[in-house]
Length: 386
Ligand SMILES: [Zn+2]
Image (cartoon, rainbow, N blue to C red; front, side):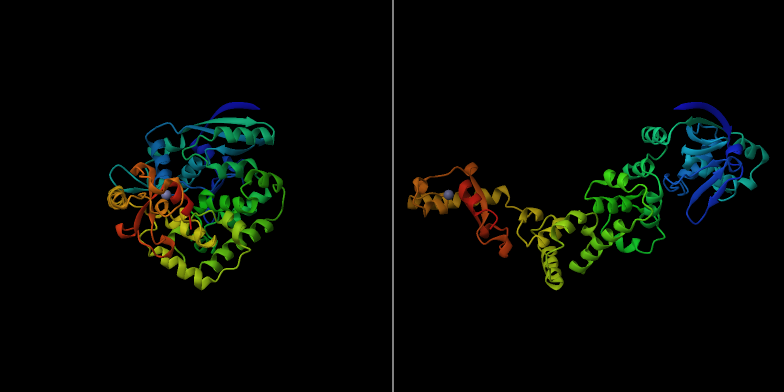
């Protein structure tokens, strides 16, 4: 790969700057010869009135703006590999689409600034590495560079590496905050649309966690039908099993849950009742586990992280049981005491015993001292998850 170091001015790079308000994208600069946002680039995320303004302020204060990387795509043609966010911020400012607050707290637009300050912005030098190489070289290198103000996340990098028609279509569907479905999806998915979290989720689901392989395999596809269909199946399934939305549903491993349970029948009314009951149970510490617990037939209590007996309770019950057992000359483990084995009269140490719900938690038994008994480890584990 060939690299050349060049210096442009902000004025040169922003000449002919075009900004797409609808998609929030900076499109062209350098009089049309520079593509600012190639399809594999992420959306413009500096437009928050802070990061974008900070770029302009840096230029005004003559702070360095960092290094930029352009990829040479033809004679006299370039696209921005790194620096898209900064260039778009500068372009929006110079074309009057972004204002800043000056040192006297007064809003300032480029057109209202003194000629001297305008000049200072336009003459600000931008240090640019121009690179020339094969598509593969450029993509690999892009994966390595990733040094801009807000680092690319995993999915943004994958979009860059596997750029093409498929990624473009996938972003239109899953990285588009204008998509009316996002509201509904946000009940089950964590993260931000414009940081590709929804796309990452859709890909994880359809690829069964083999995202790279899937993106590579489908890179040249001209549709995203399979991914869309699968994604909607998962969402519809969650919706049909769990009729009320709880905030703990966001970000669960729905893809795995769908794969494991979608062929089983559920009575939505019953499921809803169970969810309410577990949400109202003070002994359930992990509400995120409620959904998988119900899907699995209410068997695996570990998912709920049930509140356990505290040390003081255990000690008290141990002392009571042990005193009573020694009067009757039997084991202080009530199950050993009624057994026919060598342990019938064994006095266990506290450290050899575990607390058990006399009346099982799953049948409504409380985690209170009245419902606590100490068992030897063997007996407690045999009682297990019943
Ligand atoms: Zn025992």
